[in-house]
Image (cartoon, rainbow, N blue to C red; front, side, top):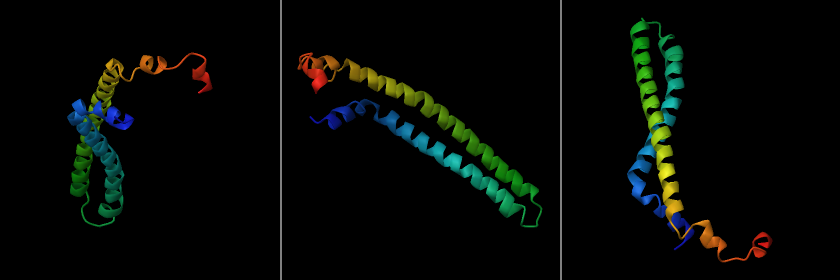
Length: 116
């Protein structure tokens, strides 16, 4: 079994959590990109239109508030659950005896390791 396949096998039990983590990270990034676009819409589009800007500004601000809430919720999820998933995968790797350092170190004598 190649090292990559062995490494990816540790992610298999956490596929759903990993997928949700990646989706939340992507949503957070898109939300961070959307906020400046909302500001540009207010300053360039609404204020220059010449009509009564207050209702459009309030709707845009409500949209921005929603984006900020989604950004915060997704950020908390991937900060907490992503770290927990990484810790669980690391624990699984440490508990797997075929990849521990002792398996590697038992194949070599002490004098040959630095020369390698």
